[in-house]
Structures are given as structure tokens and as C-alpha cells.
Length: 255
Image (cartoon, rainbow, N blue to C red; front, side, top):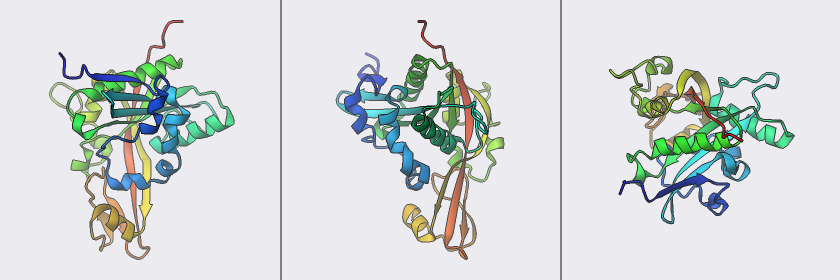
């Protein structure tokens, strides 16, 4: 029996009883990301509002992974498929389009989160494949992804534009999560320089990270892809995270 034979992956639309359990996963996201304003305002509604675009993995009765994506229109004035504001922007556009009735032209992934106990089992590949299938069933031929390179936090001072050029001998990205996307057929396009932004008082950052935040300038924070900029004068620290736009071609089902 294969290691993952007990894992079942479906869309949330197929298993609506799991919508309320999407966040039962023991994830490894840094604490400060939970305080991103777009996350707080909109992310919690994605599974309920776009269940056909989101996928869930279960192992028996346990939810062990979720994959979230959203549709949006990239043809309205002032929009583009791969905006500089990446993750934040597509989530805002998707919410606006749903509210306004705008016809979506493309879909973007938001996250694939694997339960900590199920990391290292190849589940990320299966979740990405399931997400592409879900998007294809909605008639899309493209899945975009503002990818958060999961080893970039180990090299926070290296510009992301340089980091993505770091390849293994086989030509695949050195970063493990970028490598998953490329091995699955994705193509790396460009950096989204301001994909998400977290701003807080120094007291808040001390609570989120356990670091002192007692000097002006850049602070390297565990889990952060780039340093956090600290200002004592303004009692503020700001984190602007870059991501990497990856494009996947999707084959819609034949009618």
C-alpha cells in the first residue's frame, strides 16, 4: 500500500460539511502573517464563497491539508494578471468581482497548507494537482500562483530576484516550494514585490516574534522572507513580503 493511499482529496464544493473545518490544520505559518489586514478581512471567507476553487485533503476523519484559490477578472481597467501586490491584490479583486458580478477571466492560488504531521509525504504535489483540476473544471485554462518560497527565510537579505535564479544542477529551482511548482509544469514569471504587508506597533511585533525591536533599521525575523523595517520614532515596524508569480497551464475538461 502506498503511504498516501488513505488520503482523500476533493473540492470543498464536493464536501461542504468540511468548510467549517478548513482551519483545523496545525500549520507552520509565522505568527505575524495572521495580522495582515487582507488576511483578517477576507481570507476566512474564501472557502465558503469559492468552494469549487478550493480543495481539501482528509486522512480518515482528520483534515490534513487545504488549498485555496480564487477567480478574478484581469481585463478590467487598471488590472493585470500578475500584479505587483500579488496575493493581496488578487484576493481583493476576487472579493470585489464576486460582489459586483464581474465575470472572472483567470484563477489564482492563494495557499496550499499541509498539516505539520503530514509534511514530507509528497502531499504538496497532490494538492497542487487537485487545485489545477478544480480550476480547470470551472473552465479556466490558467492557474496563477503568487508563490511564497519556503526556504527564502533562511536568506532574508538576498533580493528575491536573485534568489529565484539559484538553480540546482538539474536546472530546477533550489527553493523546495518553487521546485514543486516547476516540476508540476509551472513557469516562473516575475517577482511580486509587495505581495502582502504587515504593519504593527513595536509592542505588537515584540508579542508576535519575541524579539526586542529596540533599534532603528532592518530586523531579521524568523519565518520572514525579508527583514522587517523598524522605526523607533514612529513606534512602528513594517514587513513587505515579496512573492514569485508562477503560471500553470490547465486543461479544462472536454464538454
